[in-house]
Structures are given as C-alpha cells and as structure tokens.
Length: 236
Length: 193
Image (tube, rainbow over all chains, first blue to last red; front, side, top):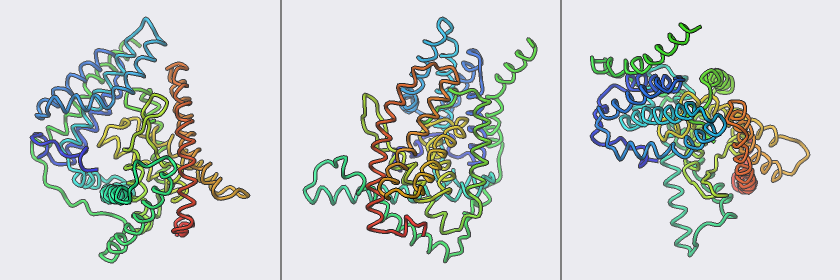
C-alpha cells in the first residue's frame, strides 16, 4: 500500500498546509469535471498542467498518471465519438476532463502523506465515521499487505506454486480471520487509551499567504466554468 | 467499474453525492468505537484486494469484495465502501471525485443486495454466500451499464456486462468458499460479534 502512494520527492507543494491542498485541488478537480465546452475544458487542462509543472512533478509521473485513466477514458471517448459522429467535441471533452481530474487528484496524493491527508479531512470537519474508517484503512492496509506476503512466503516454502482459483476463497478467509484478530487487539488497545470513535486531527498550522494562494487555485480553475455559464445564460 | 470524472453529466453526479452521503449518514450513525476498527479492516481488505488485477476475457479486472463486506458488516458496508472509493479516487485516481457519489451508490447498493440475499431464509449458507458475492458485483455492473446507456454512450457498453458476469461468478464462488472457511474458523464473524 505504501509504494504506489508515496509522496513524490522534490514536489514543491509538500509544504502547503493539508487543508489548503484538499480545498484547492479537490475544488479544482470538481470544476474541471463540471466543464462542458471544448475550449473551457482545454483551458482548464492547460491550467492543471501548469500547476503540475510549477510543483516540479516529473514528466514520467505525469505520463504514468495519465496512463492509469487512459483505457477507461479512451473507451468512453471512442463510444461517444461513434455514437455522435461527426460531432467529436463531446469525446474530446470527456478525454480532457478525465486527464485534468487525474492530474489534479494525483498532485494531491503526490504532495500529501496519507496520515496528513486524513488529518486534513478531519480538520475540515469531514464526517467522523469517514475519517476514522479512512485512518484505519491506511493502518490495516499495511497490515493486510504484510499478512498476504507472509502467507505467500509460507505457501512457497511448503513447495506450493502459483495459487489456483480454488485457493483464493480459503486464502481470503485465512487473511481475514488473522487480520480481524489483529484489528480487534488494536481496537482494544485504542479504546483502553481513550479512543471514542473520533481521531484527533490536531489544529494544523496557521495558513500563510502561500496556503491561501494554493487554496484559491480551485477558484482559478472555476473561472473558465463561470465564463461558460455566463455565455450560456447570455444566449438564453 | 469506477466511473472517472467527466463521463456522466455533473447534475447526475451531484444527485449521486447527495444520495450517497445520505446513505453514509443513515447507515453510519451511532457507530461504536470497536466497530470502526472492523469497518477500517474491511475497507482495507477491499482496498488491497482491488490492487490484485487479473486478466479475464481480454481485459484486466479485479475483485471488489462488496458482497463479502455486506455479509460481514451488514448496513455498515455502505460507509465502508464510500471510504474505500474515496481512498481509491484520491490516491490512485481509480474513479473520479465528482463521480464518487454515483460509484458509491452503485457499489453500496450491490452490498445492500448482498445483505438481503445473505439473510434470505431457507437456503444453505454456502448458497447464500455465493449469491451475495455474485449480487455484490453484478448489480453494480448492471447499474453502470444502465447509467452509461442513459447518458448517451450507446449500447456498446453492454458488452462490459458480459465481462462482469464472469467476474461476478468468480466473486460468488470465492465468497461462498470464504464464508465456509470463516464459519469453521471464526463463526462469530458471521454473526456480527
């Protein structure tokens, strides 16, 4: 669980306060997803690219992130292009929005360690049940990965080869039973230490000018959208 | 099965968010501290299992454990699935942020259908487990196809339903065997204790 979500070394946005990153980048991602016209989405995609470049994220990272969404986005764009030919604008809009959203949310993950992200959500008053479950998801994700690795090593040491389809159910059951026991012990220890269902996110530091500017990035990304709404209203 | 941002109309996504957050509020209320740990464990299990991809019918698919989560957690499965999807959207960009509500509704409804089948009277436990695992995967796939068709993507996407039928059969068989194992090794898990 650690490797794919590690903070990218050299990213200039790691020092920004977590709430500012969440507000700015989530807001920007929503603004990109709400765009409708080719020009508007194109401008938003260019702004997202500039934001990524300013953060010092390497080209390889950008290409990898885009590759993640390409199979799905390209298939949807192809279906739209086929269905609405010769109007290819909707297909281009779908591609632009998918890539823009991936770059912005990817940047949030690249600049924010998971515990900081969860603490930021808590400080933003996200529902307690979501914050606590998210925090445990991170903690137990590592635990489950370790347990899965141990089970794999044990199977190999017993002379087993690749797991067949029939092994998956019992393996999942073993993984779950063992991990459940450990989760119960962790929960008991936490309750003994005073855990009452809410994990404290801390106060967080005071925002500086850089934090305010970063959070305002979401508004900048919404400006082309506002222009689009104004144009549509003018036509109406 | 994760819908990316920009695919569905924004108004649908906003409505999906409203309904999904309503579901989280309703099914996530009065959670006991010990329950949170179990919910986090199942959320992590869904998260880890979703990273194990395998090739099937020319495409790459992964298991989701929506049905198994429903069997073990009951209605608490809904906030758990919402959290797993939020994590996947933020950290791996599997599914969009604006589309999170629709994704959570699709998969959460799959888990709720699994609960109904798991609690159906008169069937052997292994059959109920299999049906729950199947429904937990196939109902979200059918909802996805219906949404894409309604959004104007044509009927081409219906082919995906065939791929997910195979995934749902695998998930059903896996859930049935996992339930049988858990019944022997730690029956309390299946009784909500």
